[in-house]
Amino acid sequence: MTTVARAIRAALLTADPRAKCFATRKVARAWRRGDLAWEFDVAMPDRPAWPAAPELLPPGQMPKRRKAGSERGRIALWHSLAHIEFVAIDLALDMAGRFGAEMGEDFVSDFLAVAADEAMHFALLARKLESLGSHYGALPAHAGLWEAAHATRHDVAARLAVVPMVLEARGLDVTPATLERVAAAGDKHGAKILERILDDEIRHVGMGTKHFLRCAEMTQSPPESLWQDLVKRHFHGAIKPPFNDSARLAAGLSRGFYAEIAH
Image 1 (cartoon, one colour):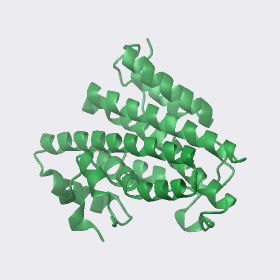
Image 2 (cartoon, helix red, strand yellow; image 1 turned 30 degrees about the vertical axis):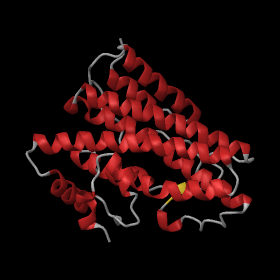
Image 3 (cartoon, helix red, strand yellow; image 1 turned 135 degrees about the vertical axis):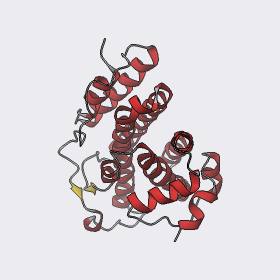
Image 4 (cartoon, helix red, strand yellow; image 1 turned 120 degrees about the vertical axis):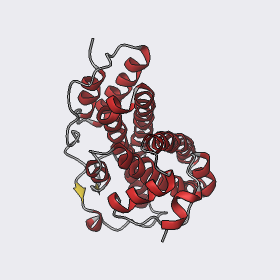
């Protein structure tokens, strides 16, 4: 019987996007069925395998986004969303594989389910790009998303604070406006994809928050001040409004966490 760690590592080291989606969903299914041994006998890679394209650029070198209404602007939007979801597959897999032994079976179940959702989101977005005559990898993409994971590789509380509770929570803030623009442009299919992603991401942030609260309980730390301290130490961007307070609250992330350090 393959171990859960070996199965996760193999998915992380699958570079081809389509194959990574299949591998991820296969790991999640095998775990749900009880086909993977509870053993963390291999380390997670420092960096997942990625395809040769897209070219990954530092945030400051990313080309300016084109006008939203133009065909190129639409392709750029869907490409950037596809890239976020592609990296999110690796973020969720790495979370389960790197910290599962320490955090237990419920944690692994949650983050393998998140990884399978992200794989499905990516597949939807990749097909959307193809329907517009483009494909994932056709444009350069932001290289910063994995850096937040790498910087918190030694501390599960820091990883939970930064990845689900900052980066994914930001998605809750910005997706509704994007959805509104896409719907206003008459793209019902695109709006449906974004609705599905938003619903799932609320659940994902909720899972991250739930396990962060467990970390705070284990260390007998006040959750809000622990989160603020970890974010100040490990997240180098700004926590800035506007906030989707209702979606954040639905995920268990009350204003008490972020209002004090927002700017």
